[in-house]
Length: 282
View 1 (cartoon, one colour):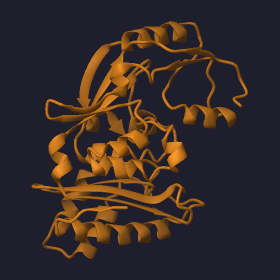
View 2 (view 1 turned 30 degrees about the horizontal axis):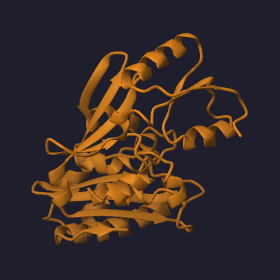
View 3 (view 1 turned 60 degrees about the horizontal axis):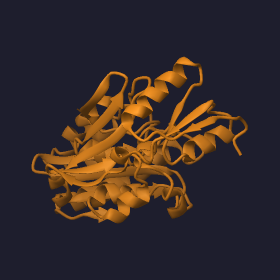
View 4 (view 1 turned 45 degrees about the vertical axis):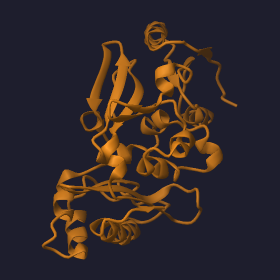
């Protein structure tokens, strides 16, 4: 049970949701948009989140879209990770999301909720980063579409009252070799020591990581190193580790030294597969 009272709202349209957020925020209610609700419930019980109003957006049609439009896959932010996986449209996104928690939890955890999570992993964002996907945002300043790489820096940078509505990925990416690997310390549903999502395009391999640092990321500098075929794979991985955008995590899940080893082994597997044009989803 959440140890504080709050008002519940269920708008029918995006415009209604944004207007409602503005009214509640002006009234000091500290409103939150609500999709699957797993994070609000979890952090609310831990007293790490407090609100006097939640705005349930998961029945707004645009937030529930799933399919193809104008050469793009369209993923509504209110789709659950299970729905994205079961649709089978883009295995890299579906299988990476399927590594989050267990099936029962993924039936509630939404794509938008995972991407905008306060938790550090946000694994569903990795396939979007390596595919230069677009995101649709609606908020007080209007309705806009932007490349996710412009808005995601350790977390999705949203303005006050902004709502993530959809992610959009060019359908051609579904035809490319891909790798998604998640390594845990023990339990099959534990947080990752490292998660890798990668694809191979005509220009080279692209990689995004979660669990390695205190935030998910894609590094163009690292990709330049990892695509240098004049060097053996082991040397490329070692050089790329020196270009990480932050310190390697060192916590109860694993020491920094152990995490680096696990990442290096997984990267060897990923790069060998991609350079052969093979796909891995595990």
